[in-house]
Length: 233
Image (cartoon, rainbow, N blue to C red; front, side):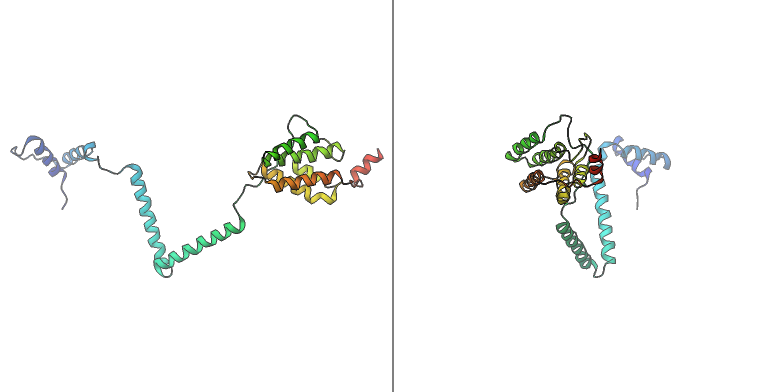
């Protein structure tokens, strides 16, 4: 049976005035307000759980209800639910192992070169210095710039300040069709380390260095419409 507000208030008043004082009779509504004011004092709430603890308790209560509902609906009850959860976890792990860690798609929107123009030889020297120190991200970047600058110096590409690695690879693949795939792969490696957050290694740098040397030794195919038009002029 619950204690009314008047009883609580009366008990509080007796505690203040002493047990020998005559009983105090207070109407119900004022008694309820008086009890509410008294019980709102901090001294009565020193051991109450914190706001965080109350939120955590509600969360775990919700998880418990959800688990109970799921176990009731799953075939085999709780054991069946555990088997289903383990199967889902195994499937996720298998997909993770098969597909690898998700990576951001590289966005090649920034120009390939900075504001200070350098020759292909200078870019190669910078690339070799970075590779010697094990800084393969910078080495790949500088070697790709050396490739593009070399093609510009050979007049196989028009010098264009805002060109991206992907654009350079696509344009260079026309006079050098036998290396078009390798040029695209090199641009992809450049984008990965520059914009995609990936880390290059010595193998990536070696592939790019081999491409740079092979391009220097390759005779271009100057039969496209642009080259034909340029020869006629």
